[in-house]
Image (cartoon, rainbow, N blue to C red; front, side, top):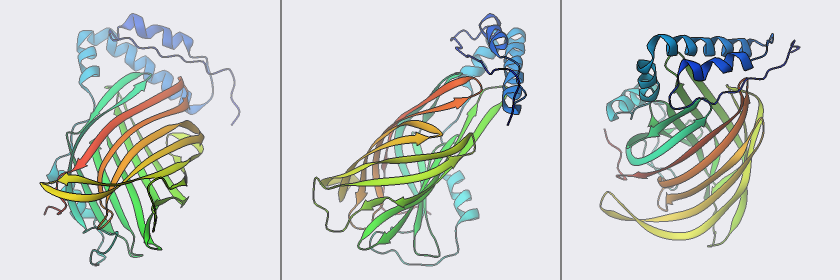
Length: 303
């Protein structure tokens, strides 16, 4: 797409978020024919107007706007409305279908416009079956963020074959939604016959509705050994892995995760994660940082 002029928008919004703070962003936005940049210029204009008219009320709204925990009833209604009619019994490396409860905490942060939102403490999750025998694990970090992983039992192990991530950011006068969809041609999660210290490479590729182009995530998956976790008062043997991935392409960054899966059926038991993702935007390079943890509360799904 051809454009006239240069995009040069810089947001460094301070905690005060005053009109004086916001006016320079309009001056820094050079004219362009790109639709997305024109949209951002109008968004900045709206922020200035609200800051001028609302003053401290706008500051309070900015700080308080955002996500909240997803309730179990909300997860149950979604599960009942979207759950597949595929009937199958649980098996090795395929946990029972249903709704599960996780507890955890976390923070997500954008550097510009500076904005944060929390994860948890309650995080409902669902397991659904596909017609091909694979299963989908979806976790709701909050009303503004969910993620799903699709797993298939193969060759005595478990492969991650794809997934999705949804995020919504509320900026008071507007909100931004994005959905990322990935497929994984080579992403073994649990390997048959693995020994502590064994390492293999995982690779996934995908796109985001918020960014043009393709993203590749790739890096080592290392099996650290078997550990015992306490889940709902029961001692559960678990596989412990260290997962490191690097993002290249339309987005760049790193992902560092410690993950635990139940030896009996592959159910995700615990996840400690730290992700940093950088993306180009009409307002410059935006850095997203996420740090959090979640742990399963019971091996049995709730009804």
